[in-house]
Image (tube, rainbow over all chains, first blue to last red; front, side, top):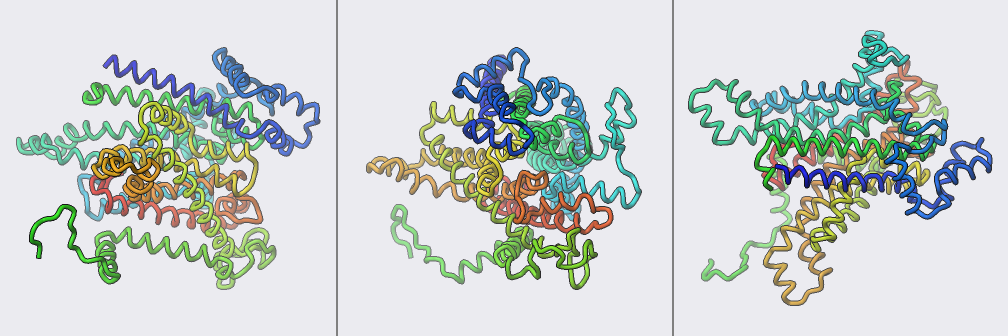
Length: 317
Length: 298
């Protein structure tokens, strides 16, 4: 187990380094001049002097490797530079917006689990019945409607039918829990539903696999009631593959929040990222890319480690 | 009649057209969802190809009808706030969605396959390095990465295609690599090497055919995600730019008027959902057919 953890941690560190290289490199795949043109076209009020200052601040006048090393040094000191748009420290902006996104992630995950687990089990136990087909259809539908379209439709339907729109002025969970939950409910349901589609399909197939195992037959043969066989023997083992896809879900979620937070006017990391994109605030953008990717790497690391812990066969692989 | 068994002898008659058709019908019968979705996709593709002739009006022409008129016989999908015909715009959007997704998917498959072939064939350090690179590439959500690429590269159809190709690249590379790893141990590959066939020829003639089925599955499974992402990028203004029409762009234009004109939201959403649904169903069906081990999974 220790060897497994150490190996996995080392790979994690390597991945994190490469992720930093990507986050920094994506912004620099075009020559500095082309990048400055993007900035100038987006904010016409910048004077040539401003542009020269931005160019120097981003280090675009230096070759790639020294630029990257100096930025990486900053990352270790907790200094990701200052936003080109607001002038505030990039890291401070991220720290301000991250809690909301994490709250949304947790709520979404809860919603996804509440939907996908029972439905996935039901679908597997009643497989190839009408109920199974219907549930699977809903799951594929969940994969087929983009979250942002679902969000717009949900807002539209709620405002037209029950005349309810989420409170617009954002309050954090600490300030005003009730308002906060009202604001987070709809977005959490939407990202949760989208995530549940994948989880439900995974739960179903994992359950089907497990239900074929000998120990399930043994449990049934010794006269255990069906409910106990499924809850005690099957679910525990079916859960392992379901956990592993949380890593994939984290990636998808971070992509979805970019638009979902914007639609619901939530000042989270996703919206900060979209604003940085639209304003061509490349310094903020590379910082956000780094943090988002590191979060995904971290979630995957935790998932992998827990997988090794849950499934002894993996540890010695 | 088979007298002695000669190695590799195959007495099956060459498949005739009628035989192939029968097999197709049998497959369709076993896979109704797949057959229906394939029909849907053919229909959607036809709409995309015939778009300029099918659309009753110019999708960008202003004031074709009254502003924000409800769906009616004259304007089956209604009109938008500038009096543009929504049906014509949906049809034009179909063309955009299919062109963008098929082009970027092809690009992603091409590059992904090349990476996968190299990774699986040479193994060792090259493979390790490529796999770690793909790992870290996969840590950045593809949607965010695509948006960042567009923001950096600037607007333009080609740049959008390039950015969206990212979606498929890791999956294609991984799938091809896996197939290569198992195929390179086959006797026929050893034989080809023994007679001195050059590496490139072995890769293209003996290894690549093994990869076709898994690649087609990867494509159908991911094409939906690419269509959704094009819509998302266009929705936030980083994707398709006017005068080209895209479903995502239509949704974003519809937002200010959606309460008085809900059809402006309903039709683009429906178009996206139906198209992606068809591809997702087809992907599931193909996986059932070609990979029985995964039958009914994920």
